[in-house]
Image (cartoon, rainbow, N blue to C red; front, side):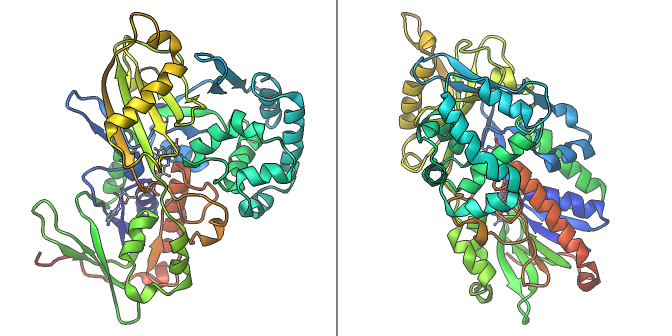
Length: 472
Ligand SMILES: Cc1cc2nc3c(=O)[nH]c(=O)nc-3n(C[C@H](O)[C@H](O)[C@H](O)COP(=O)(O)OP(=O)(O)OC[C@H]3O[C@@H](n4cnc5c(N)ncnc54)[C@H](O)[C@@H]3O)c2cc1C
């Protein structure tokens, strides 16, 4: 079958890859001039990379790791020590660690928690451990039921002191969805904890060895093309054209940069767009259908990704750091953690600024100024004294609508990869799969979508005409 896929983020590329593997011909159309969507990156005037987001790959990402294996690029993942490292709030410039010993799960996770005495008291550890028992015993079914609570409400229901939020979960909830524990669904935090506690290497982290469009997306594109598929940049889906029976007749692709617009026709059609732009393109007759109406409740959350280049090394830590700052989420010194960004003398901090709703509309200079005050607390030794570190340059990347905001009640709004429209399918991290809004979720959604299309091959395949250029 010929399958038209709109969106070359990880979901669209994964969908195309698995369709191509199954013998179909995917045609991917991407609006922008760069691959990757939320993992997109660009080079600045000096040749330094800057990215949409600081991205971490977890041991608990089976579909992503399988993809690396299938592409034979596993060596591009730079695995770090099995630890989680938090900045200490009361002692600026110091860290508190959760180190996972080389033992089977969940013993290694329990040992990591029990071994950390800086952040949680023994009564807090015990009440939190007891609270997690239902999740451990009843698994994902229980985790899904908890979508009615925010994380803070879940803590209250289990009589767990809210101080554990300040210590651990404020940082974790910002890292998971760029929002605070009062807003995030308990399902999201419990899903992550479950994976981390049930899989020995679940919480182990890796950095990619360079920029995702080149080091991850490009090999997927090459694989797709080697099997006869196509990937086109600068090709935005502008309209989903319908047949009289409500099925898709064509994807109308806008003409940009001097190209003609055209109707892309295929046997099956996939939207791998994020939920917000997809809602804008919904054809009128579909809008009242329940599956699409529910999408009204899903909306992207704002986030800002910062890159700060300094005149010296600020840290020697080769890992992700949880800042525990009210303005910042996680950060890393990419000059140490990522091979292609390596610099032996100078630090490049990449930081996620979240929650960003009050900041997304502000000028870059204000955001950098606020970040620098936070960095004074995180690195007092480098910004005090008479020879403080100098900021050489910075890049701010704002994403006003990033991954969907995972507030309570969202699980039942998420659509499946199949839709009531016989030749139309959905991929994207917001579609239903167990890894929520993440790279793993995007890759899995693409794989599930490819499977759903392939399953319908008998109903869908025909001798469809090829793309027809239409006058602009
Ligand atoms: C700051 C930040 C940090 C993150 N950190 C992590 C992390 O550490 N670990 C993790 O697992 N996940 C992380 N994520 C989440 C992860 O990046 C996303 O979940 C995932 O990349 C989403 O993939 P997707 O394919 O579903 O959507 P997208 O990546 O958004 O892809 C959708 C594509 O559709 C294209 N498109 C839009 N409109 C059109 C149109 N009209 N026609 C054609 N194409 C169109 C877009 O340009 C885009 O390329 C982070 C995200 C951000 C923003």
